[in-house]
Length: 171
Image (cartoon, rainbow, N blue to C red; front, side, top):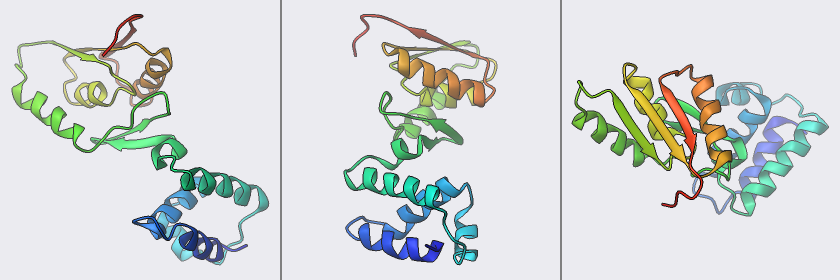
């Protein structure tokens, strides 16, 4: 099957979605590790069997309502690309407003920020990327969430953030 054929089929399958073409192109872009513009330019290329199986799995997951961020394992937040999983909440655009509010209220003489219920670390990591002279502590009650947040910090090369798991901590 060629790229354009897969796209046509998947757009039909996703016809009840708000943006069927966009979602199909995002899945294809992720699996092929190519830009959406490359996909459009080279839509005559054939998809091998392994790629088709992987795409089918992603389409099936999307059809049962799994969020795109969990399928891709990534979500952009602030200016950061973050790993996410069902063990974390997906960072929402409106949470970026919270980061902006913190930045507007922050005392520049202050050197510490605490993020409770950090999840994938979105808020703490966004603040750490801007406030490099601050020590940021991120806390969660999920070891899996802390592991993902630490991975994000390492990949973003942020070393002014410290992660802790607190057993019995409930939000």
